[in-house]
Length: 450
Image (cartoon, rainbow, N blue to C red; front, top):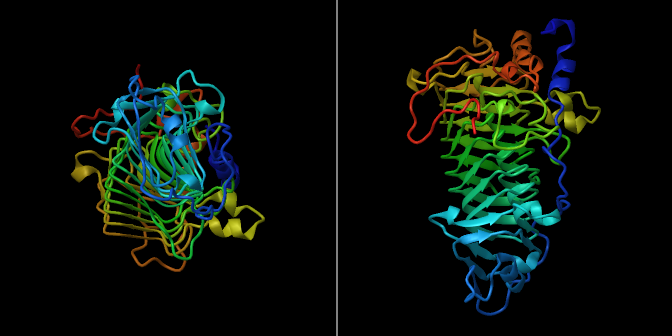
């Protein structure tokens, strides 16, 4: 490993964390102005359309029913495998409901295998259609995303499963105020769940992620420039890293702001996907570069006014919680990007680390002390922090200026600068392993075996 002190720390961090926004090039719809598309809901009594594979059904595909439906209608889909991509585009579909099997969503499969072109990209695409509900489906084998919502004001994604996609499992972009609930995302080669590029709002509409499970992904949850998001009562485990709000200039509206991460279990995020994975590792993006260290529960990579509270964080071999200024943006000539880079007003409180000492993190908390008004209170730690003297972990309310610790920054840099994606063992060299406490129905995953 090269001597870290021989190069400027800022240059090193920029090189380590120079990441594009997505893992693969995808032809997404352009970002619009959510909620401004007009209303074209069907006049009169809403209709119900039934879809099934049997000859008795008028509609054999979900797409055929969607083309006949209007806003406010309901499409009911029977159990079966539907090899298609479902496209819901335009305000004519406002308040449409697409309902499969709410209790057993894996019985209603939307499968992208053998599809070509645009049809192979997304299982369900909702674009510029507000308050659409998708309930009770399993999307798999799509090149981009399982369920993708873009340019909308309000959405409901519930009782869904998304697996083996080329980018994100369940994804909302450039949208306001929706819910993702009671859903599972696994084996996605970027993030299981993602909310990003949230437009700033005078009267914010919060997006709620509640009672979800995310595992065996590169990231359990990623949120580039996400705002007004609450992630609660959910499990993030066996991912490369657990929850990673991040600021990037590749999307609009940095930084992540006014988010809440509360009441979750964030554990065993030590999945070294470079040593083998149920998905293809792309040549670029978060999965292709060593930007996000493997083995972290929660990482704030540039974040403001975010609260991380009342979570159980355990068994993450590198660190349970980490916070880093977004150095790329800090070095920009754009003053707005400089401002977006700063860790400001983040509150880390009342988290339980290490599962009462039965399942320790490698380190409980890492923070280099940069930024302003960041504070830490009521956290129960069982393992050492970085820095070990805890000098940077100011109590709440936070100080006007936090106190940077260059040694802590150097240690964090070493975690990302000494790795090589062609040598998976390098991602584990700073891990501190401890025995895991058994979790019902879940086995810890460090290296994937088919």
